[in-house]
Amino acid sequence: MKHLSLTTAMFAMLAATPLAAQNRIDGQSPDAPELAAYGEYTVGVRQFDVVNPNQIDIKAIDAASPSAPLPTYDRPLTFEMWYPAATDSIGASSFNTYLRDGITEITLEGRAIRDATPPAASPSFPLVILSHGYPGNRFLMSHLAENLASKGYVVASIDHTDSTYNDQGAFASTLVNRSLDQKFVLNEIAKINGDSSQDLAGMIDTDNTALIGYSMGGYGTVVTAGGGLSEGALGFAPGGALDIHAEGSETHDALPDPRIKTAVAIGPWGMNYNLWDAAGLAGIEIPMLFMAGSDDTVSGYENGVRKIWEGATSVDRALLTFDGGGHNTVAPIPAPEESYAAGVSNHYTDDVWDTVFMNNVGQHFITAWLNKELKGESVMDKYLELTANGSDGIWSVDDAGNFTGDHTYWAGFAEGTANGIRYETLSAQPAPVPLPAAAWMLVLAIGGLGVMGKRRNA
Image 1 (spheres, rainbow, N blue to C red):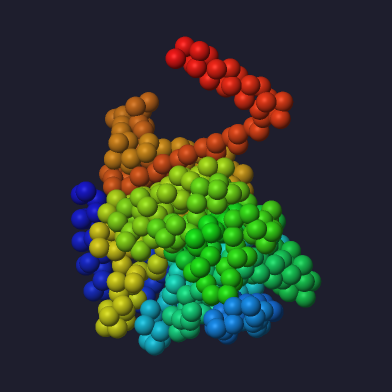
Image 2 (spheres, rainbow, N blue to C red):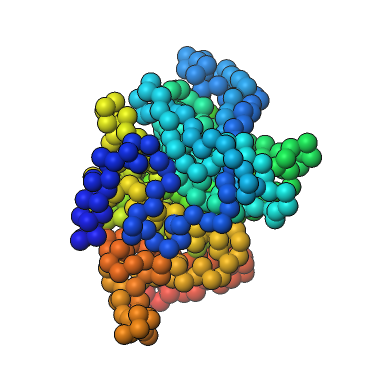
């Protein structure tokens, strides 16, 4: 894997430069694939604080009173929204947040301009909702949010209450609330889009939405996409609070939203604990792109992410795998400089792959996937119809540097840069057609005749 060692060495040298010390989220590796590049739009960003009323209060459930009604509270949520902005926008492009330790405050630098004015006239942009891990925060995937907004998307990244670095509460709250938070934020953004007093009104196509979730956000994304939980999973939360997400329940059947057209799950957690069975995974209703490291010890790979991908039989889906990558594959921002002194840099880094390069590969594939699924751009097919193993592609050019008919290397990747990465696809399997009662009677009758014949021959 020559590419990996070169990339790692290159960024090890950069780590000592003032650029790395700026905690930039907008890095572009020298060997980044084509679609990782920023798009044509100036990017704005702003914060929204909302409240979801009458939600289950996990922390207040009394395990000693199993028959008591589930307590509720008004659940506060914050989300950050990145969006295409007016080209003449000026202002601050940094933002403050917390490290994984929940104590250290840091400043991140990007290209998005705080509270920038939207374009005077613009099309309606598809919506993307980002959902972080446990713990995490709304800036953990800010590199992806900013990148997508530059390409004509509105991107909302949620701070999930009870699940952020400085507000890490009961794990059961994450299991119950992830999907509910995602759908509530979608509804709130639809209100913003329809509110003529908002300068963002009319520019957000909430009827054309994608979900992107990492780790526990990926768990929530699978549930929201239609993956109902198995009976064995329901005991992970007290008081039957998880019953609302049970496969086949009325509440879960009502959860998938026709406005959500596709989803991306990065290292989704839960299958390694059997949170879904075959029927639950078959309930996924929308095309999905999965991303994972083959050595993910948090969510699992063969018994985790890959198993979800294989089990989502009702839809077309793809799986992008970084061989040797761990749980931090693709999603986290590059490790902030302060994370090393705080002892939490391993929350952001990978033992094998360079973070910036992984971010760029993720940006490339997610751009191709969303442009196809949300914008209907068939030209993206060339970036998504690939040899399964990047290293199996053939690089073939003529003397003028033009690709020849033998060329099968991954579109958008420079020679050698797809080595160690896999991209596999599976198509939806048609649902079995139920036989009418008369046909079943005939089958049973034929079976009975066969048994009688065997008895006569015995």
